[in-house]
Length: 71
Image (cartoon, rainbow, N blue to C red; front, side, top):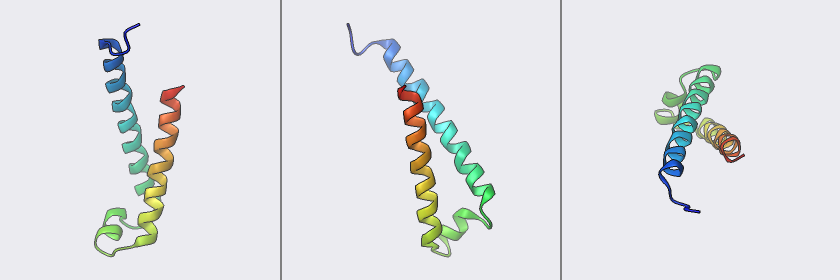
């Protein structure tokens, strides 16, 4: 059993690419569901509560995507 094979490397890149696409789509949907402009509120107005909420959403989606890929 060869742990590092071309098939495993291709699968890793494929699944991580799909995971990044799903995470990007979920960030876009979250941005559309929240009132106002998300990045303007975080960057210019320093809205810390919105930044924490966005970070929690990103971490939650990342855990869900990782669990889906792992199983």
